[in-house]
Each structure stands twice: as structure tokens, then as C-alpha cells.
Image 1 (spheres, helix red, strand yellow):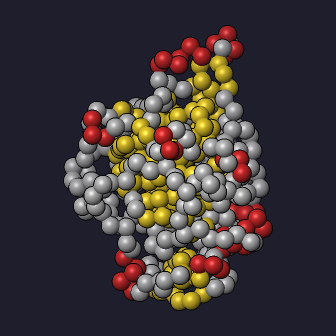
Image 2 (spheres, rainbow, N blue to C red; image 1 turned 90 degrees about the vertical axis):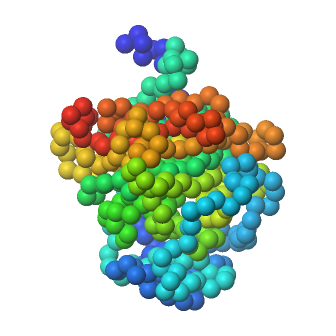
Image 3 (cartoon, one colour; image 1 turned 30 degrees about the horizontal axis):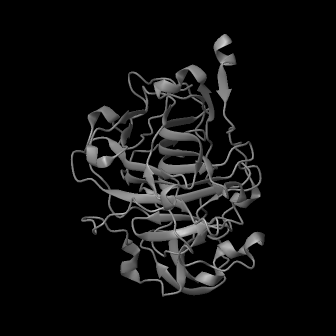
Length: 397
């Protein structure tokens, strides 16, 4: 008990697993205001509606009724992770574009012709840092039941952005569970603002077992707000091809590897938080929406998360994989990775720099683990993931 008295409880509380009304899928319903064109996706039960960008779902939010859409950041914003030369072998265009493209001035919105699975909001750990363990590169924290994490975290900062190259895989995911690789930023408090983006495998989604690009946000710790992608008004979408769609290229075990430069960065002139994938602006959360992040984020994390909280309670640990489904010790071409992990602190013209002090957030290293990388060209990097259930990971907690 004495050890617990020495721990400092950071101001980040567990986000309640609620079912706020705003998580109901609205943009994927029969409401097609601003419809310009419809495209067959090639996936059973999914159509692509091309919606006038100025009539998109985001603008139905009460705080955005008079919002002027920004096509690019107004002022200097965190940069430094993008390549100096075009990269080989990566392409973020979608296969459905073979059936037609959304016209200029429109965005793509998924329309399901069959009932869609309603995905519960993500939950995050309650972080407890031991005052005597600052030099150990570890964080003591409590995880919500049915959730596993293998991540790096920068804590107690004033982060103006976060970035990394995220290696994309297709982990095996059981039934109604999910496995994600993402970047997450949050304000402090139990009604915190949270924004996140990355790749998710959700077998219940319209694209099945394929990793799809997603965003998520809440402004009150999921108490009344919060949703994925365009399922509720809020996130302003700009790119027609990326959000909500599968990764066009996926890494293979002992084969070719694909990673994408993911950045979540704040425009200091507007407080809008932008999401970039490689050179493409996916869209942004307006500063008037995520006011808790106007001065910056208190915490930034990079890594994997497995959510098996919706599965029936059993003592046996889930077999859902994280990353490649292999432990980080196997290294390049076998384990999933994040490389050139960085954040912006507002210094040096708000440029994204390599992460300095960070901590490991690992719930069950025998199930999913993290191991720092050693490639000098990768800056701050790490391998992560695992198979879930194994001889050393037999029981859930």
C-alpha cells in the first residue's frame, strides 16, 4: 500500500464506455443532402456517395453552422516528417475509383445498403506514474477490462502535433473485436478532449478484415459526444479517397513492407487540428469543436490497441492479433513498427521533432509487447504487437 501512496495520478481518467446519442451513424444513413453522384464500391452492401464539400455532414454540428471550410492550414503548421522525394511503392488511391471518381468539390461518404454494426467508442487507460520509476522508461497504469495496449507515450506536455510512419498489416481479428495502430492526443481531465487517427481492423465493418483508415474524437470523455469518421457531425473531410477506406497496400510476413506517414498537427492561427496521410490532407477538427486542445495536448501516444470488451466473458485470452501478430523481437519484415516517431511542442516554428522523453504503455507483455528499434535512419522507433493467446498468454484479466 505504501508504494501506491508514492504514485502520482496523472490527470487522465478512464474514458467511460457509454453509448452517446452522437455515435449513431448519421452520415451513412439515407440522408444524402448535397448528393452529386453515387458510385458502386465493388463491395457488397456499400455505395459511395459524392457529397458537395460545403454540404458535408460536419457542417450540421451546431458549432459549425457558420464555419468556413479551410482547404489548407492558414499559417505555419508542424512539418518535418514528410519525405524530400516521392516514395516508391505507396499509393493511397482506392480500388473503387476504377468504377468512377468523385467530382472536384465533393467528398466521398459511405452509404450502407444493409444495417451497419455499431462500434463502441474506444477506451483508454488510467495512467499512474511512479515517482521512483522516472528513469526506468516505464509507466504504471490501469487498463479497462477487455482492452490491451502496446504503445509509447509522451506525457505531461503541451504537444502541438504528433507524427510517425505507421507500418500497415492485416492482423487476424476475432468476431466483434478490433485491432488498431494509431496516434492519439488528449487533454487532461475526466471530460477530456480526445482525437485519434490510424488503421483499424474490424470484422464487423463494411470492409471486413481489411485495415481501414479511421479517425475518432470526443470532447467530453465519451459522456455525450464522440464518434468514428463521419458517423456524426464534427470532422471536416477534404480528401475523397482515404477516410473510412481500406489500406491499398498491406505488409506481408518476411516480404514487402508498407508504411504511411501519419500526422495530426495543430494550425496555431485557428487551433484546427489537421490529419495528414503522406502528402494528403485528410481533413481537420475545427478549433471551435475541440476547445480543450486549443493550447495543445497533455498526452500523445503511438502504438497498438486490441479491444475485446464486446466479446462474451471468458477466462481464455483473445486470439485477436496486434500489429503483424508476431512479437517485436522478430524485427523487420516480421513485426509491425512505428518509425520516426515525433511530436511538436511549439518550439522551432512548431516543427515536428523526434520524441525525447517517453514511456512504455504495455498491459500484458506476454500477449503484446513493445521493443525499441535500433535503425539510426528511423529516429525514435519501435516494434510492437503479438498474437494474443499463446502458451504464455492464456488467461484474460
